[in-house]
Amino acid sequence: MLLDLPVDPERGPGWRLAVQALEGGGCALTLLVSHTIADMQATSQTIADAVAGRRPGYGFPAPSWRWSPVMLARDSVESLRTLPDVWRAMVVLTRRSGRGRTSLPRSKPRARSRYHFEPAVDVPLVQVVMDAGACQQRASDLGVASNTLIMAFAARLAFRMDRVDASGRVKLVLPVSDRHSNDRRGNALRSITVMADPDACRSDARALQRDLKAALASLVRNGDDVSPLFPLIPHVPLWLARRLEREALGADLPVGCSLIGELPLDVNRPCGEASLLQISLLECYTASELERLGGVLFIPCYRVGERLFMTVSGYAPDRVTSRAELMPFVRDALADMGLCGTIG
Image 1: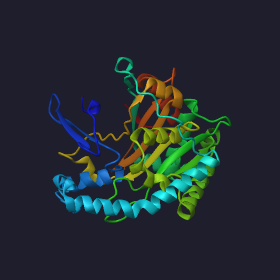
Image 2: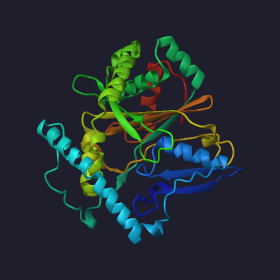
Image 3: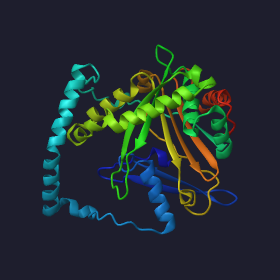
Image 4: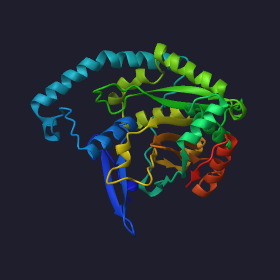
């Protein structure tokens, strides 16, 4: 199964592609891409370029040249140039640790014996397909933008899955694209956090929209909390980078809500017009990790033509561990916000 095959952005392969013929004609096409290689905007643009026959030239050398003396010298110079950024990142991390905002693991976790290997758990996934025009009309009736309506749905779903903090609020974490023209970065993203009142979202989501605008304005003025630490990533062990990432995202039961926006129509035409497009974030978790994190909930939303798609990936220990258990929560949260869609 393609999703069980590893991807390695450092040594390759960084992505995998598979095609499965279907009975009665047609096929299912699956593309698995490491998020280190590309974010959703970069991936969708690359697919659209391939469908349209465009071959962008980024000027990257062939893999065999990476170990040539010239390339090693260039890489060494580039590493030296980043040292000031690494030093500033260390200062930021030290200050946050002193204020209790970042907790560093005290020791490297013990390696599990091969006789005590814990398999990964399949996080349930449910897709919702809605009419984009109807969704926009519902948002207009409530006096908010359609993105705010999707965030309100995410807050209601989190509330129903009991993914709230001590005060009953939902922590919505939203990636924000920082990509510009001719941007070659794999991940051109920053993030904002908005605390939502799920009860207020159901009756009046305008406060949520004000908080979203305020968070975006603060991001423009002050930046985010995570980006200053990025220069450290190449210089720390992988286990430490993963531990820090999961500890940061696992605090206060966050809910990921990725508002991808409208995708190029060619993304839905990899080999002819597709009847269904599903985008989801896949992460390998063990049962003990999911227990420690209190489960996970991530909702990307994207539009293709006249259809609006949401892919809900959610797990709550002892409550929502299968697709059949997740579907009623999604259905009820849609009803809370007056939304109609096909759930599959």
